[in-house]
Length: 241
Image (tube, rainbow, N blue to C red; front, side):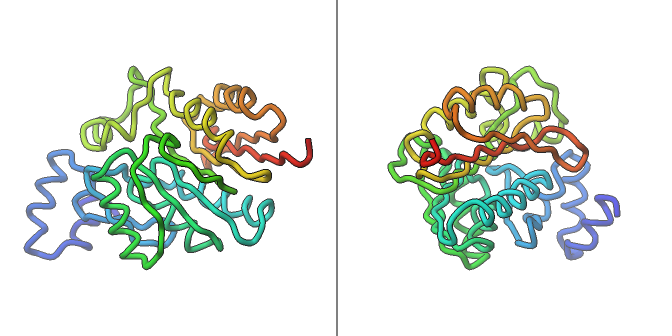
């Protein structure tokens, strides 16, 4: 089904002409419709939040499996740079957890809070620049941070519509991995997982950053369905040292 047929399926007749005009102007289909399906959940999206992608669904699925295998039955989670809240909402539904979710954008947090209400989950949302304003410790830290380098070529529909604050990062796209892992030392319990989505060429660089801050942890780079490096999982067990 092409985008125009998709619009015809989801928009009423009164909205269809405007929707088709926006599509011709290069507005993403998801922003026109106003929501996406993420891991079976309806997630509202607008221009203040990144459009959740299938790769991030896979991050969530892998994280759930790691958590069930590696962590206690009841856990505490924080989602860094929550955006639409898709990750936090899904983990809250799938795991027995207290979930905190932060973002630096007030507009994004507003969307995330609406999505939590839509999906009938209780999540603690607050504004913070990653872990800067966080004091608690967690069993699971998860993030799909900005990781596009400023000189990296990306599709016009993404560059022209999705929030730059959620896309771009300094230091060749590595800025937030260093920031998160540097501070995560003080925010993980004795046994914990850090789960992050990465750019397809960032596996070695993010692994090196992780080794710098967590030299005794088990670090795994895992691939997405096309076979590209896409996720890093850091398995921490301080008691085994």
